[in-house]
Length: 298
Length: 279
Image (cartoon, rainbow over all chains, first blue to last red; front, side, top):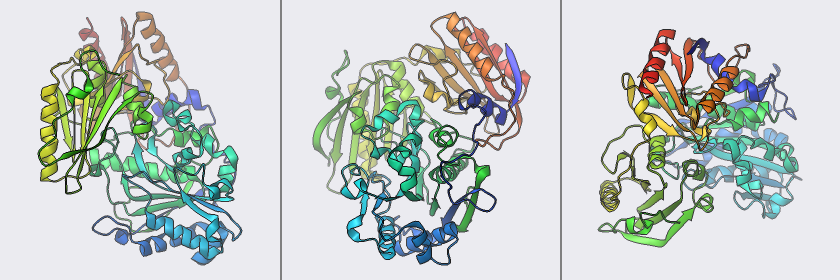
């Protein structure tokens, strides 16, 4: 019999160390993502209680306002028009990578808000595509110079969470090739075909996130809640990391005790530690909170 | 595609009054399940699923109820899938069941059953109940829970607070232990993770049965090595800095460990009880 006094933090550190190595969570992204003066990765969380009506439908005008406020903060622009011009140029060919999972899809209203802002920048309508499962055959996506990645966060039966990182799995010919070890290496997809460089903005939809899944299709309304938020940033790893913290916090509140995701969403820390795609460590993220603070969970 | 005992189709429920079937009856196996369940197939495959049959019922109010019967081949795997999801066993159908909003799950013999609606109202709840009762009657087989559960000490064990598995991905079901398969959990092992104590003072028991004593000893060495690293306390998974006790040991072909205990005494007490329960 062996017994050992050990702190919770030490336990986690010890069991991840063998694989991740001493450089665990050292931040070395392949490009700079909206770093603040303190060299932290900037992420904006914005919430608005009036975003959803009684039917749970998103109000497009409120979404527009939320998104614009978020990107003004993210880009340090003076106004939304200036902010969008920092993100897109009129010559861009833009693919808006959405998520159409029928139980919790990206709101159509949000897709339209993004498109309308791209049109305002001067991108021609022919050069804007909105797609999910057809992106490999979509002519706009095939010749795209810019991508905007937008999807809701939800728990996932195999990868822990459906995340921004995971949203690009439809770019690959055989998604199941990235399923091993609970989708640990999803970040690798982002390094193919310059996807990380092409991605101008990441928007994690947190209006009614799914924090727990039951049944074969891993969805039950009982385990969604009105969080009324968007998380916006340039670094998909950092945005996912913030979303993940909120999901974990909600699980603790709901179940009355720490209830880890099952399985853990290891693809997010590994996107940092193994793939150097971005910043997963909350200590290295400058989270800017806008709007409602009640039950913010982070 | 079908188990030796039953043809899945004959287990399908009768159509509830006021409902009709919609679309074709669908069958999936381990090769095709990925096409059917977006992202969830691996859970069932990790518990050795053989095949699943799916039928959709609709009514004239736009409601849908999807019935799925999974042939898990072994009783213990049907239980494993059920235990993976249930938070409390309501024992209403089959050998264990739980109702969530508009969704009933249960297991019986080698089968795991899911009856899920797109909404919830009185009509839907009535139909879900009728469907579940009907399937329950049609499955005459009765299964056994995994034998390894008999070793769990009952004192302090949270009711329905345990999961059974034989794929390392589920190692962290209640408590983060490792992101890697440091204990060599695979098809040949049976594992259970159980909750003890109270919400305010929760501790966990991990118990794994290996094919041979040498396998357990090898796992113990790998586990011990993983926890002997002298690293600085610096991570972002948890803010909890409270010092807790953990401990582990082997007996015969079993490895067992206690995590997050309040004291070494609590660790020793639970390990000793497990040791005594291993015949």
